[in-house]
Length: 254
Ligand code: BTN
Image (cartoon, rainbow, N blue to C red; front, side):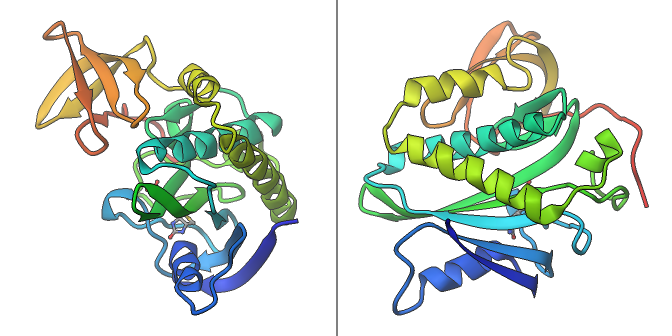
């Protein structure tokens, strides 16, 4: 079993994982920090991550890859995203996909977000903090969130959080251990086959321009290639350089 620590309340599980990695005698093996409530849950692009107390899964899985080069770090993101996809599918959630790079969507709604923070030494990744928030039992969300959804919104069931936590962590653990074998081609194939917008026209924005686009590829570094149907040309984007525009939809608001 992986070492696990559970907090009732904490600033952010990613922050706590970071603190533990910075102690004099830091852990050397994978471990997980889990919280019932985060006072300063962090999201991508400096956003916050809000989750109702004790209703959802908020945890950070700390992974020590063996000899993974920094240039291959996107593989961690792919493996983590596919783990959550597998977990949701096993729980009878349909229409699950990965919104590049590693949000998990059900239809056009977000059920899970990830914040992955790596620490590197030379060309290698020393440790990776994989922060994951999955909406599980929360049925209503703050109005300011664009398009949230939870497992309970979809199935009407109430889930045992401990059980779901162990389920998802065990899938993650297995998938991360496969990474060490370096089978990147198979990983990419599975990632692409679960990608929202692959060979499908959706609306994107980049540098203030809105366009119809079709995802064509995501390369080993995580850069995305989108065919712009307005200009009939392909461009490659890094994270933050392009955004999917989510159509207006009915909200589960408080
Ligand atoms: C995003 O979609 O913007 C990423 C959200 C990541 C949230 C998780 S919850 C557990 C971990 N601790 C944090 O502070 N953030 C991540």
